[in-house]
Image 1: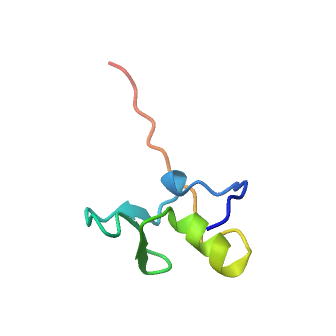
Image 2: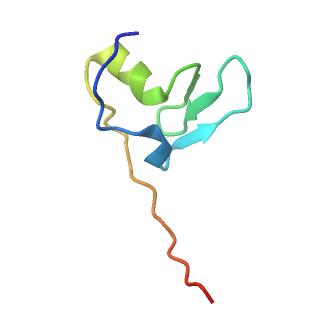
Image 3: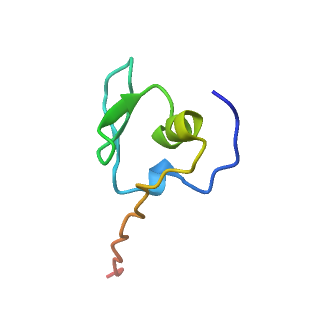
Length: 65
């Protein structure tokens, strides 16, 4: 797969998950697939476009105390 500069970071996406399968450790719930590489890289290599399913995770703010 080709190298590219991506603005999509799967680790920050709500659809990304770890599968715990050694052959396919990364997954995308939105696009329903598992891969050896980060899903955004597979999407870019397959379509030539950045992932259109990216949705930033909501962060939970916690207060110390």
